[in-house]
Amino acid sequence: MFKRFTQTRPFATLGIVIAAWLVLPVALKTFLRAGFFEFTAPLTVAASHLRDLQEYWALRLHRNRELIEAGRDLARVNGFYEYTVQQNNVLQAEIGTLEKALGLPALPGFRFEAARVAQRDLSGWWQRLVIRKGRNYGIPLGAPVIFTGGIVGRVSEVYATTAVVELVSSPNFRLAALIDGDTRPLSYQGGINRPFAPARGAIEFVPLDITAAASAPRRLVSSGLGGVFPAGLTVGQVTMVEPSADGLFKTGEVALDPRLSELTEVTVLVPLGGK
Image (cartoon, rainbow, N blue to C red):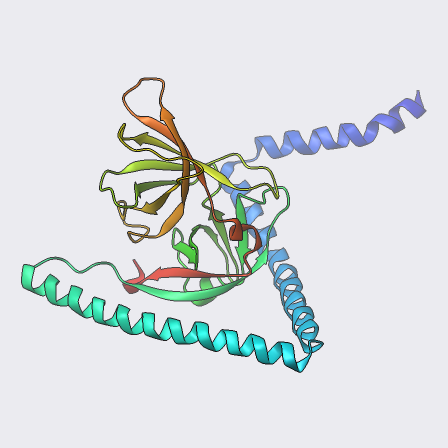
């Protein structure tokens, strides 16, 4: 009898802990969860800095010839980006002139805050990641997050020195989007993706005349509706559309950028004026 009790005691203890957690008030659960995240944040950030240091010393082992070639390639890329920045400044000036002439409200402005990726859970590989900046850099809840390939996701939790980003591939992520070249909005939602498998999403309410296939994909971009993401940011590539069950619209699949799985740095768009 004593041996049977000894064997079942761990399960009984676990059951008591689970039952106690279920009956706790939601406010207390939220406080405990946030407190635990803040407590473990320094360890997460420290591990991320150690990985950066490891990469630094790994690069120090490269031969001078390889570093010279990499620097030359980087100089070409920087030259292209400098030209793009100049073009962007000209276009922004033209937009400002047209806004004043037509009496239109100014488009929302953003401050670009670059942030390193500190952590990515294997169990939620396509759901979220943690970045090394939080309230200490003015990161607000709900801020859009982007990278060179387009949309990464939005900030879903903010802490003192870190923030959690819900990825565009997460089933909880929804966005009003457009097929590039078309003005009719449709609905995008992340999918249920397995870790390390190609990330995909889904679209609904696609007009019947829209076509797409794996051999002829269509670019999906943000519509700007909702006031969170600026218009024109890449979401992914529509690789398939088919009629929906009601026959009024089409549904489809979206292949997301494969670089989402290996992000080391992202950019948070912080609204100017703290909005």
